[in-house]
Image (cartoon, rainbow, N blue to C red; front, side, top):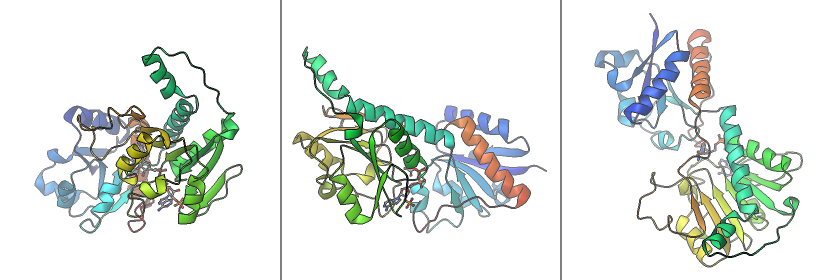
Length: 314
Ligand code: NAP
């Protein structure tokens, strides 16, 4: 008999079908069943589930669940429920996502470096004004978070001749990149930053990390790119600093409520670029393959994948 894997998702029907088609192509020797298609007496047969934006209530019904494979890199919602969840969590770590995310970081860093928001404003007012820009190695781009996505982004920016700095929880050594850690390290690096890129996970320690006090450490005319999670920043404080022209521009890809609500003042802010959570999408083909490798190793070789540290929160 084939092992059964539950697919637990709150995505719309069309997205679920797309995911199931991708997963079923790869999981030939397993049966992948959407949670709502499971019969109640089948719940106890499920040891492993593949999840994307799961409904926690559904996961709790799977009493023998040992671990879940998330199709997302960020798993803060599952971790927030850690007291009621007995199973382990595996997050998506995919080289393809690192390439796509680091391309996004590079693209939007160039957008800011090349003053594109300013030229767009000038065009709107039929203004023909040239602005000199510094050499790339005179522009300091700081990456917050040096994990799978942060490291790939830092290396790509460095290869493109920017002056790159990075901040993480533990101290790192990377050739050609100045690294920082700790609260003092954060304040020290913010003071030198022209473009700040967040690729931190959302945890208790990073919630509202970039508050008014910390954002004030940024150099005058610095810009911000948030490709991680909204709650890491105080967006109200960020908007005030943009209004005061202390900061130049912000590129925001993530919001407390997504899609961003229609009457949010962020939409209309002339110094904010809004993106609809597109900086590092999960690739269905490569992610399905990674999920398969983790799950197959577990069932065939009894080898557990790397579980998220629920205490650290990432
Ligand atoms: P990761 O591999 O777990 O890396 C996390 C990094 O953040 C590590 O370098 C870690 O430091 C650092 N960190 C964690 N807590 C910290 C703290 N309190 N102070 C300082 N540094 C801290 O994560 P990842 O795969 O790179 O993903 C990062 C995040 O990107 C995800 O959690 C998700 O929220 C977001 N994301 C967004 C999108 C999108 O489309 N917008 C797509 C994918 C992911 P150490 O190295 O010292 O442990």
